[in-house]
Length: 388
Image (cartoon, rainbow, N blue to C red; front, side, top):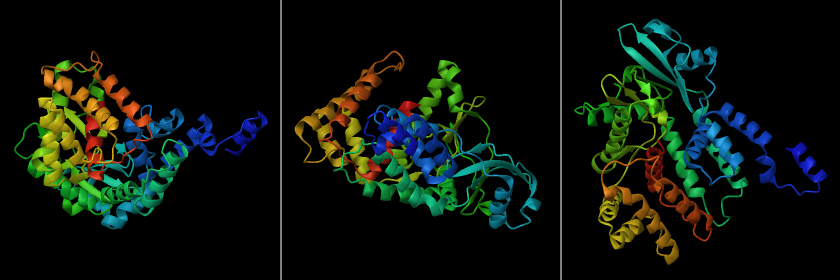
């Protein structure tokens, strides 16, 4: 970064810290550092990359997008240490087979396939060492990166949002909690043959290790070339589940990462894999979203405004022009739903219109408003489904 600054000075240019950080060469270095850190830094990057679009500078958006790739797996010796701490030094005696090479590696842990001596075919998620201890500093580091991009107005206080992000990540790093959420969703969906939730194995699970049934299937991203009927079914199942999570269960797995889902081509079942970001919502918020949905379907702008205010998408101090802009965005998104029938994403301009309207609102820094954290988690899930 110092060398880049010297080059700019030699050309008579006045370098800025943000500009130096976000040069292509430095962007690559930052990406590599965050990927090596894994943990919360990588998790934050993955979340930001889901919808950064044109909001972040291209170089910063590239940093975040690269973090959606798999993390570097931990070496076998480190894996041995983690498992010995959780299961004891003779842990291998419990298994007929334990594949040291992970079948998946993500932000805060990696997954191994194993066969227990009692015959259980298992997927074992093992957390990277030091993840919990580094969460707070990792979130602060990513927040600093975003601030340096110059995209956040100085008047915006993101401290409450960062505190909630840290809290959420600490919960995600507790595999005992995730196991409880896995078991709860298994019970909620036990009578629904359209979904598969792997069984939770509490006898092998700790704060750092999560054991569940191994379930096959294919990655949902791989279905891009599948028949239209298959793709339609997958998305219908995902949208139906999201609506049930909000309006029936009041409990939602809020991480829209595509890797959290697989699909069984033989049975037509959607497989649900990750429940670390499970979040409960109170009756008032759920009721307000129900009112907003009804208002959208009825094209009732007055009811929509009231629901948006109750939800916290804007407040009483929001200028009328900004309220009107949000209402236009909302109406544009609901128009296809009111029309009925199938929606053809490639042939429809709605996505572009919503993006352009959203960018126009975001560009006006007089209207920068951070909704309540529960709303942010819900909108993150909705946005992820739309992108998929």
